[in-house]
Length: 417
Ligand code: AMP
Image 1: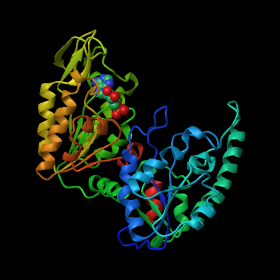
Image 2: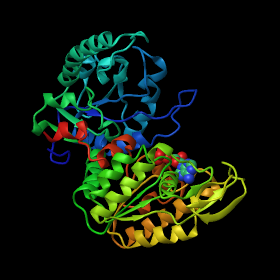
Image 3: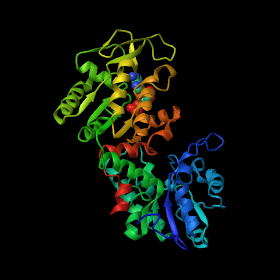
Image 4: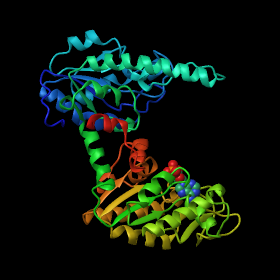
């Protein structure tokens, strides 16, 4: 079932959203992107005359209630965005009366789902020195009560909509388990989730070639599963950022003070071997912009990435690498970018990431499909003001990374089965 096919008139819809927005010390929202991202779905249900039950988590509460993490803080803003007076249920497990009182076109926001340990299914309050046995027993208890918790949520509604891509990689009560209580005609993705799933599908399954992926970031160890999965899919893999100094060292180069994982040298060589075996063109930086301190105002110079002098560290790619990266990107038909090619947070070391972003924009304008996502690359593309010039910027950090690692996301699978 899709959101567009379903007529919500008179129906109670349980909609899992990701309203985990940042708040300041006065509990004011400092960035409402996640709320705005869910509005098209919520508005469609209200416009149909549906009865909206909005559910989300916020932060990492450790008790019930935990006022710091109350969704009450965001209620006025949600009402304003939706243009209706959204009601509030103080306890997500005791909202039966509030749900029964909902009329067509009305909305109810449930209190933070994670006030209950059952949402995540993780035990709370275990002593630090708890034995493995005790941990196992506590987990069993919470898993048992998770079933009852999930059923209470499911019983509120006639249908289930998941629009929380940010938590799609978690098999939590409201993101995955609840879907079992609804048949395929009564569960569906929200618009945001639909867009994310489609974007991931375009780079994982429906690939137009050449497919070029650009992976950056600080460490190869945190990206290894993604890199290995991509080696089976891409035509060209460009590596940038701190992780590349591990490759330089592995090839016998000198990297000065650059970030380098000494215990991952064999892994780097193995990735190079795998790329060759699979016929994937691996593009590593030729030159680097090196600095004599990890500081925006440090002294800098350009040098070969495999010949970094003592006392210097590579904080961005150099002009030759930028040209090589841009050349490879310009000819692509499918592009995936995850991770900056340098310390883009500092003005003097963002040129490499900017060159990558510009080349992606150019290829996109010529018809390529480009997906940017996973943490820092999103901050990067936003910083450059180019988010609307690529095909899709993912809202899901961890979820996107797991999807491109090739994992099945429980939140997606639960709707599709
Ligand atoms: P990750 O979270 O692994 O994607 O890494 C992103 C971070 O890597 C950003 O904060 C960048 O500043 C950092 N980074 C990128 N290139 C370098 C580099 N050459 N040296 C140190 N940090 C880097």
